[in-house]
Length: 212
Image 1 (cartoon, one colour):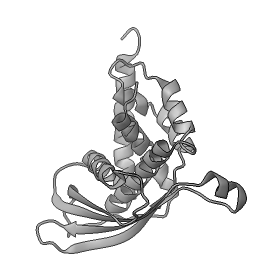
Image 2 (image 1 turned 45 degrees about the vertical axis):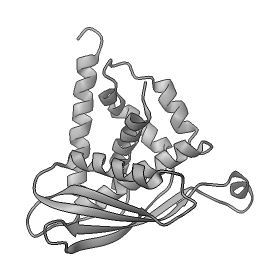
Image 3 (image 1 turned 90 degrees about the vertical axis):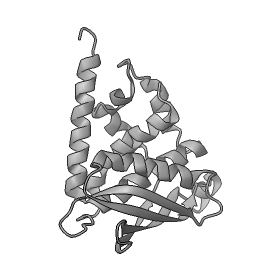
Image 4 (image 1 turned 135 degrees about the vertical axis):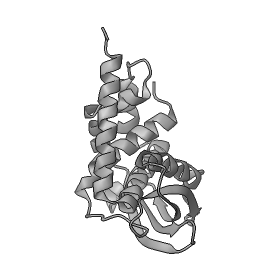
């Protein structure tokens, strides 16, 4: 069965797989050196955001960045979260409302303190595509040492994200994390990371399959 952290990683990996539909991202370079995220700083400016949203976002960005490697030129991601809005069911039925998170990201060269780039990221709480992607890619198996993932629980958690505030916040963090890293490292590197994680998940699934 998934715990909260495992499901966040599943959501993040699936979100990476879906990032290809967003605008092109060349990535941020420091000269000709490859970069890696050494630290992440998150400042929450929206006082109405769920408790611990910023702290958990920081942990998830660090965890996601580890998939991109830990060698090369160290960078710091400075994330200013300007808006975290959870949909109001009544407003959604009458005048329209939606879940939305928005942040400004600064990419800083760690050794020199020079800002290399800045960009804006936004995310909603859409999990339907992430769920389909995570199951299709076998990502769930990567977090289930027994090889028998409790898919029913995962589906219920994701499907109720639009009415469950904690599930909604989790989905927005996963999407915000994936888009932040995609813009930081670029589409080509993100595709490579996604492919590598897919292959690892498949191999784990084959290893844990009955009769193996």
